[in-house]
Length: 281
Image (cartoon, rainbow, N blue to C red; front, side, top):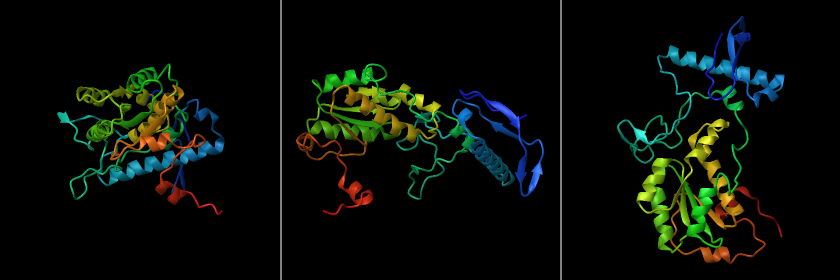
């Protein structure tokens, strides 16, 4: 039998025939992970997952035949690289550096396990409730921007610590007192506090996404920051959510605040030109 580590989910081991190169190997084990999500799958969905599981095993064997080490089971994120703090951009699992000695942001090789991913929770692990999960964030925003004032929010992790500091300093230079960083780990939160940057420690909220089908650290960060912004809106704040790479050069808030009341969403011109077809008069 082929046993699967629990990893927070119920598991079971079953025997299924394996069809490879036109031949059937009897009693070849294929692991099935049974969760609340996978119990809803149809027979066709199970066949799809089983095919993927077999292909994954074949890929493992192919790597072994080539003398290559196994891939990591999951993408990783860390603030410590050996005995030192990770340099900016170094904390995520990388395949290699480019020719300029810089880490490739999206090169994160790991063993994608389709059955495991598909069996995970496919909805947010919590709701954007301002008085529950995000009470601390809302309290911080209320101190910085009283009476429902505008909040400028950027999310960052340890890799982006210098960018987060740069983002905040430019916001404060323009007099934006409602600027704060949603820190995705305690190390960054503590660092920013030492540097006088308002920060909310969202590490525990981010960790809750480990129960979902999102595998990459960056995926969970991108989802969690939107829930945080939604909680601030629910608490009565106007919120501008930006990337930590944004650099504010001029005071733009009056133009946003002066927008027509019926305007609900603003999109960058580049986004409109790339993804939205023009409408004829």
